[in-house]
Amino acid sequence: MTAPRLAIIGGTGLTRLKDLEITHRRVMHTPYGEPSGPLVFGHLNGIETVFLPRHGARHTIPPHQVNYRANIWALHNTGVEAAIAVAAVGGITECMQPGQLAIPDQIIDYTWSRANTYFEGGHLDEVTHVDMTWPYCPEVREKLLNAAGELELPVCEQGTYGATQGPRLETAAEIDRMERDGCDLVGMTGMPETALARELGLSYAACAVIANRAAGRSKGEITMDEIGRNLETGMEQVKRLLARVIAS
Ligand code: HPA
Image 1: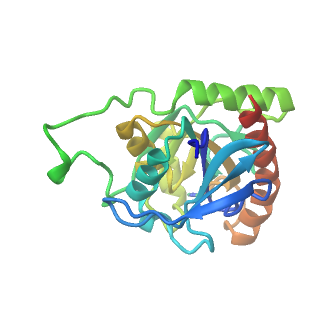
Image 2: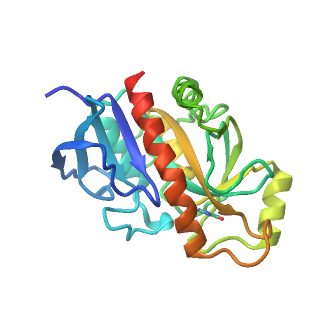
């Protein structure tokens, strides 16, 4: 069996990749515990791909309880060349409008008390610090941007993702603070996933789907209905984008 070329991590709204012709599923046990579910192997556009829904197949694992270490370890262990993480987010700055896609180029971590490193405990020969200046793999980002260009999909070509703890949404004041910090997007799963991929040397980039305007950025409250509707539109675009990336 050859290694899959690409790993896709599905977020809220993408628990299943319907165009993936599934060949098998593999239950993985890692030194860090169990991933969110069995890895799903198959062919996407004829290319070997592995898919993992971050919140579990039935969308039951909240962002602060995802076993990010097990997920990234398991995917890296399959020998993939690269990983694309799909994530639902709120749009903070003006250009980040619901239903649209964005390929972030920076991230700020506001999460706490998550298992956020492989470099601790008995696994370590010496203290190690990975470089995170550019947190996302430029080559994988470029593939996403080129594919979006070929499909004429409107995407925000860069942006800073602010990773919050959840599972609650933010207050308007928290979003104001994040905007002052330079965040364009807010989501709950970008960290520690991004840093863990870097620690293992896994080429990783994110494709964010804007599900709603962030707190205080539109009239009224944010509803799950609104999030669901916008994700439906956005995920159709994501599926087309992924199929094109894999063909490249
Ligand atoms: N905040 C945090 N995470 C999110 C949001 C949000 O507004 N929308 C979708 N995921």
